[in-house]
Image 1 (cartoon, helix red, strand yellow):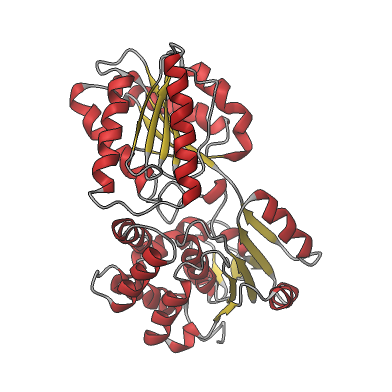
Image 2 (tube, helix red, strand yellow):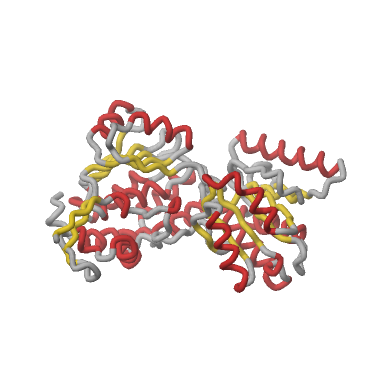
Length: 413
């Protein structure tokens, strides 16, 4: 595909129109993706539908245009030299000729977004999916081929088990983008040729911070439902899943009562026929329940609620915020009651390199001051409960621009 002939506006139009199709529950490719997410990725059907809605609502033409404007000003600089009204200098931005994308198997959505960004900057995209869970990228590319064969021809998938093909792709790439655990990213970087830019998205931790003014009789039930959705929607697998909710004591509704409402909301979301959890999740859930039962017997201020069968969801309440237990999936959430917010900041400060998103619920006059403190601790996204799994496409993932850092600029003075 010629970088000069295909305009950015044309690419946005195609990708936006395709997203509109994917937002239709009856779209055949979407139905195919839902089946695969249920059968192979072990999401429930409701989870799969919610994940697809959250993804494609952010990949519409207006929002892709908004992303480019927010990061590079004038999207037409990707088509050729355009004058910057502030400097008077003409600029031309070019994406990498070839990008190798390497994806993890925990969440399917990042692979779609990464390829869309690559197409926006007119790159050839080569993707290596996880051998454990390939998600639905190949189905998305199949749908793209059905409506725009030329654009689809710029995308290729690498056999997840073919290490040689992956190495050859990286050797010929101008950029390598990888998602995964910190250990895996470290190994991948060793194989990236010297001088080739490498952008890594590793392990991150998200949480909720609810101040006492948010725990009111009028708000508590809704807050529990919204929080449950954040926990449930991605099955607690991704970096935007809250692993702990810090809730301040002294509200009109106690933190313990809020935790109980949260458990009820999670039970309702799982439905009468929850998806069957893997055996390791069942074992971990039972171990955690046993641990909290022993604490309760010992007289500690703890409570716990768990699904039946075990491993679908669990809520664990206690007042020892310094014991920060981070779950590893399975919709297990720890609700930690605290008195002073400074104590919470002290507990999370050692995790500064890994902090991602926070669902912040506080009085409007208190919100900005708390947000400023959270940002100084490394948090890069602050949102409201119920929105954690639906980040806007303009969100600075890991605190960095999405595609601006992929570009090379030429200035014509």
